[in-house]
Image 1 (cartoon, rainbow, N blue to C red):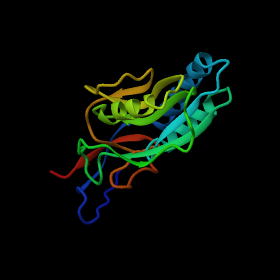
Image 2 (image 1 turned 120 degrees about the vertical axis):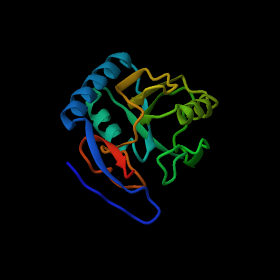
Image 3 (image 1 turned 180 degrees about the horizontal axis):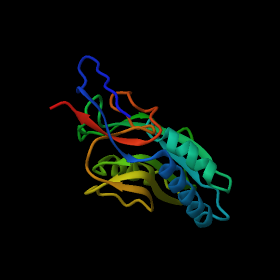
Image 4 (image 1 turned 30 degrees about the vertical axis):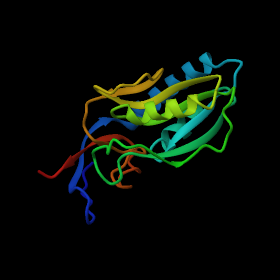
Length: 183
């Protein structure tokens, strides 16, 4: 698959090498669903999706978990329209659910540096949940993440597809690709 999309102010580039196929994502999501189902027997986890990138993964994951789950969403920002994190995490949308005494499973699309995830865990821990765990589809090499459930480790490239974007572009791709900026 190739394609180039440009917009004013965005890095010019194209869809690069496919890192993870749609079939690999489907199979790994089913495996994660099986593990979560077994680990949360007798409890009803609250899946907290980190918008917008985790929407596709969280939808598929929720269907792969064979116990009742609830869902809620948070939106955070540390990228803007860049391929580099700003290092500053902002809460754009907070939870609507009271998580006190709840079993919270944060669902992330990607752990890049781990900064956003550490911030979210600290914020949510202060709300006194019964437990907090992390399920991340992708974890970049070198990321500081304490994710209990990991879909795929990946190299430190900027990736797009399956919900991951560059300034809202490329989310619709069914697989994960490297974004190749123009030299």
